[in-house]
Length: 304
Image 1: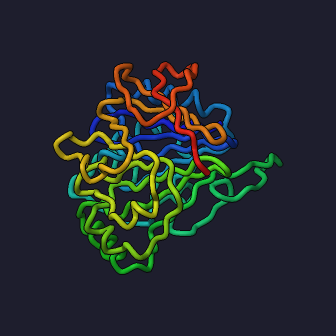
Image 2: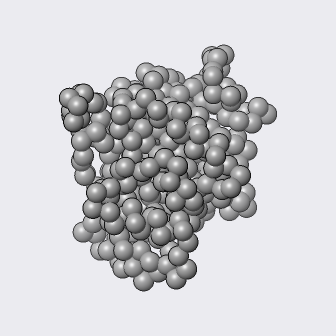
Image 3: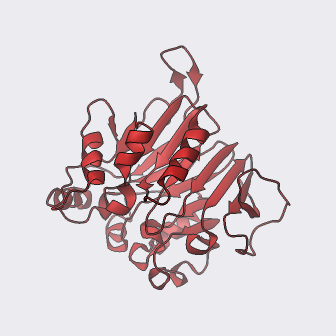
């Protein structure tokens, strides 16, 4: 069993994956004084029996690294994954300073790009104690570091501009089970420029880029190729969400659902949400009991 959780953190992103292997992954960080103790306590509890842990940073916008310093202080980040960059900011928050320290660490940083591989990220292998560990099933579909559009974005962020378009595309998949995709805050214009550079597999669960905003609308050609079973619309203001752009696809809106948990067991994805009054009409109802302190929304039965 693998568990994916998408936290409702307001205008930002934060996820974890409790893998069906001895791996634990956090993607992005958006903590506040109101939620940080609860979220960190949960992460510590859910990861306590895992051997390998990693943090993946999609990009250093504040809503994706907010209070990263607190996370690192309370639960030390040993493996920090990010796109190699030299992003700067005119005003450096404590979060950004910690991001830069981790990003530039020879010991902790691992730079991701299309096709990269690493033991336990997407390769099996033994640890220093001789334990054989199956990999996390994480693969990177973008960036291609030689791409001219991407290199232009790297130069822009070096000069202090918005880092949205250095976001990687992260695929998480379980053999004979679910395939999930994260795209950070990639923007529509940039995706259109690189549309021929990436080939996508069938996607079961897609987290819409840029929190589901119209500015992050995925090109139609990519959507057709992905054929996502469910698209998660993030916590952008409702007026900015691209409901109609994804009109042909099943959607869950985090603004309304609040926290969302995806329990992946073989060819089933059981979904739970914090809001007991939230509902959708495209999931099967299997009356599943759960211990997540959430409400059962329904089950997606995968067609593999």
